[in-house]
Length: 203
Image 1 (cartoon, rainbow, N blue to C red):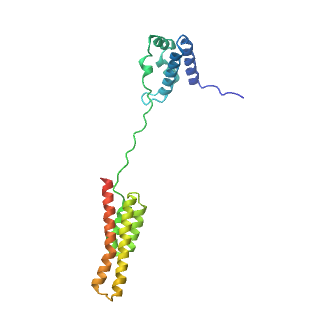
Image 2 (spheres, rainbow, N blue to C red; image 1 turned 30 degrees about the vertical axis):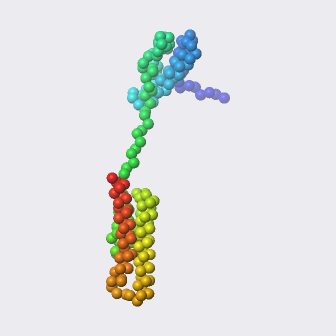
Image 3 (spheres, one colour; image 1 turned 180 degrees about the vertical axis):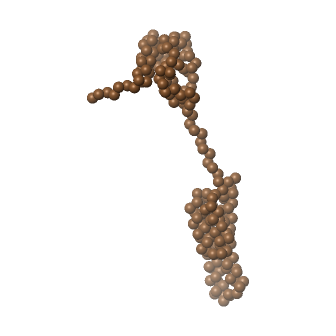
């Protein structure tokens, strides 16, 4: 089995770390490990730094300085400041604030079908509007439930009123107007609930 040759940049890094290891043989194990880890982290961080990234390994080790200088600094008590600086790794992107919107064409079409549409096509238009509202993500489940409740309740009240007035043998214009309004008022209220929900979301 043949091992793939190391890239030139890998050879430079490994040679530098090997020289650093050899120069630091008189340090304590803890100092030596800290030195090797700090330098290895520095090399990795400089390659992906947010500011002045360096992909060329030779440039990175030149910035580190000769291994003997780093070891001498450790003997004196501290690594040079440029090696101890926090790694310039790109920070995580800031969270994207959620865009608060008052809704689009589908939402306002639903409200229109619940309000104006209810007077043109009672029952049919409000139910179509509620189907659009149900599919929209701009309203909460509670708002949709409230709108469905008053819409269906209004239609049910209209039918019950129709049956009641029919049984009482009423059939005048006023009775028809009363049934018509009973069927429309619920969806009109539902449209108001959903419109208020959109305004609250956009505020």
